[in-house]
Structure formats: structure tokens, C-alpha cells
Image 1 (cartoon, helix red, strand yellow):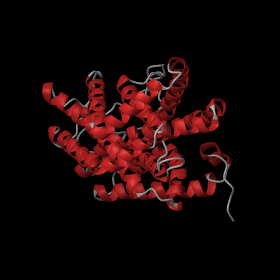
Image 2: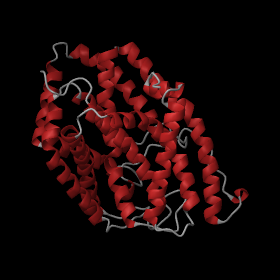
Image 3: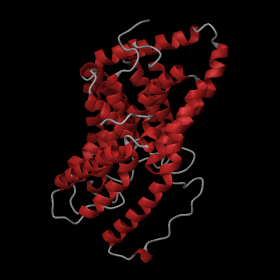
Image 4: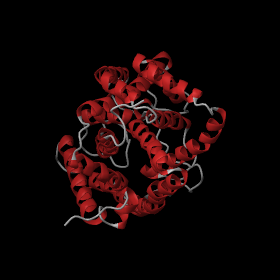
Length: 392
């Protein structure tokens, strides 16, 4: 079936970049959350508004990213073939993980020692010994998304063979395509997927509502809630790329999706009393309602933002394409810089929102400059985004 959504869709590049760039905004705000110690260092100034914004961004940003990863993954697979696809994923995903992980560990160690000694007014010798590094405690840092993405690629490639053998005529895959179209147009799909997310959250031991989907940044085996949620997102993106018609459904329904997302997010914040915490705050039925509302918000935000981008921002833009290219580098490198800036400003006599804006502005300025001057036309840019001819 021929549709208007074929080939490279500029709006989806923007969505993928936006999901990564929201990570900068999310991490930059963690030191300003009211209440308990939820981050490496906590600023003297706190802001409930930053906390509510961070909670909302964290609901959908990684699910949206994995939808786009699945979408572009299938596109690359069918354009390049299995062999070239595997080589390209090893280069673009595997090598950055191997190269940048030790760099991040060194930078994190330096910044964490500085931050903890400054916050608690102690010497480095007084810091507790870090836990021994095991398979369960292995720190993937914020690069966990590369590790998980490699796993999703492997599972998808392995599962293709039995599917092709069983469904030689394509009838089963056609039925799945039809079910996907029906599920999106009838709004049944986000509800069913929300219940799956809710079940995985409720079954996760020690799950705290404010944390949302537990980040699989520790241990070589990702937690089940993250695998269920992000695995569904990746699979959905893979299936979306099979038929452009479903993108048209998302575009048509984006206002309804965003209204639903706002409503579900408001329910979550209302149930929590708009207050942060590091321990479970709800019990029984209220905890179940929160988990279901969180799952609904997660999918409705993702579907609504994708649909809105397709409706309003699908024209080609050199600025958006530049940011889409730069976003990978920005996300990989941002967290040590953000943490260092948080430590630097933590005692300043500024309002929390002013400090937050300062951290974001400096982070973006430094990383965009480094991308343009050191990365875009270098071997690092080739590694992350492919070869690019330098302009005079």
C-alpha cells in the first residue's frame, strides 16, 4: 500500500532527537527536587515546578526513543540487508558503548568525589568504599540505552527466521498489521499496552512511583519492567515501519492522545500529592490506579508527540536535521558536564529556576560547540552518524 509516509520522514528524526535532548533537561533538574536525596548532589535551592516537569518528561522520553529506534532499525535492515545492518549497528551502537563507557566512568568518579565532598563537607578519604563490581552491580551509566538497544536488535534478528519459516505466505504478518491499525484507530492498543506496563511496574520489587519505569543502568541483566516497557516500544516501532498508514492514524489522533496524556499525568501527580519521595507512597488500589495511569500517560504522550510532529513539523529543516545529528553526541557526553555544573552552582544564592536555566544553557553551548568543532567532520562523527563531507 502506497502512502505519503514512505522513505525518510523528517518529523521522526526530530522526534528521536527530541527524546534524547529531553534527557539533558531531565538530568539537569534532578538536583533541584524538593525532599530527600534523589541525586548525587542536592542544591540549596529547590523547585516543585522543575520536579513536576522532570516527572512528566521521564514518563515518555525513553519509550518514545525506543519506538523511533525500532522504526529506524527496520528501515535500515531492509535497506542494507542483514550483514551490512549488523556491521552498521556494531559500529554506531556497539563501538560507542565500548569507547565511551570507560570515559564516562572516569569523569563520573571525579565529579562524584567533588560533589559528595562539597555537599557533606568531608575529605575524599572519608567517602565510603564503592561496592564491588559484579554482574549485578555493573554500572552501565546513562549509556544503558545502547546496551539494551543491542539486545533488542539481536532478539529481533533471531526471531525473524522462525517467523519467516512459519508465515511463508505473510498471512500472519498481515493480520498483525491489521490488528495494529485497528488497535491504534480504536484506541484499544494504548490501553492494552498500558496494562502491560502497569503489571510490570507493580511486580517490580521496591518500585517507587516517582521513579517511573526503573532505569536499567545497573547490572548486565536489565530489570523486567524496563524490558517489558521498552521492548514493547521497540517492537511497536519495528511494526510501524511496515506500513505508513498507521503513522497517518497517529497524526489524525494526536490532539486526543495529548489530551489523554495530560489527564493521565495529572492523575499520577494528584495521587502523589505533588510531593516527591524515594519510597513507595501509595498502597493497594491507589497504587494500582497510579500504575495504570502512568502506563496510559506513557503511551499517549509517545503517540501524541509522534502524531503532532508528523502533522506540524514534517517539512525538511536544516536546523532540525543538524540537531538530530548532534543529539547522539550531546546525550552521550552530557551527564558528567551536567553533574559538574550542578556541583558548581549548588551553593549559589540564585533561584532554582535560574540555576536550572544556566546549567542547560552552558551544557548546550559547550556540547554544540564541541560537536561542530571537534566531532561533526571527524572520525567520531563518522562513528556516530556516518561520513560527512566538510563544508568550507
